[in-house]
Image (cartoon, rainbow, N blue to C red; front, side):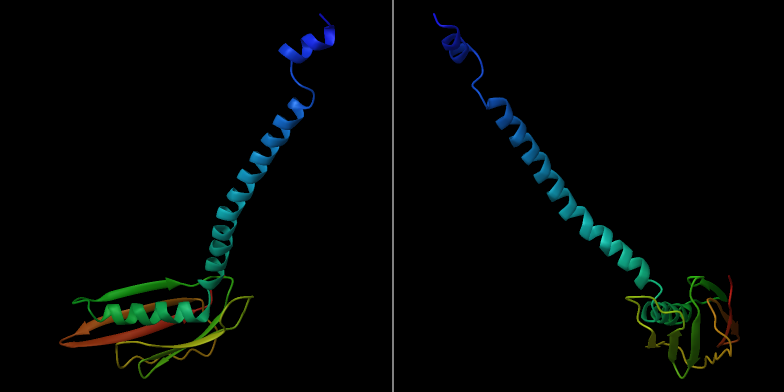
Length: 154
């Protein structure tokens, strides 16, 4: 029996080890690609969401929502709302409207917005930028009195 014929019958064929290695690498590359396609969009969405939470539109809706929800409370209420300390906002509340302007705009953020509240009689117009608000509702007899104060915190 020839030595080379014995290797062919019981041994590995030439190139077989390389083929398995290549297939393994292809499977790993495909798994990494699928993982990247599933994780990367989620990561980018989370990053955009963090930016958008500070946008004027979102902050305006939050403030209007807090004011409107406070009207449903049968007792006095104090809402302390800290906005993103990296940003400054110009906030004006009058005639059921919250007018807000983001003074430190970053990419992807809406700079200004107007949102409606469900409560009459709130006037707030600070002359300086704010990033912290306190909304106080006090019951005096049957009437709800609102006070809004703001300041810039660092």
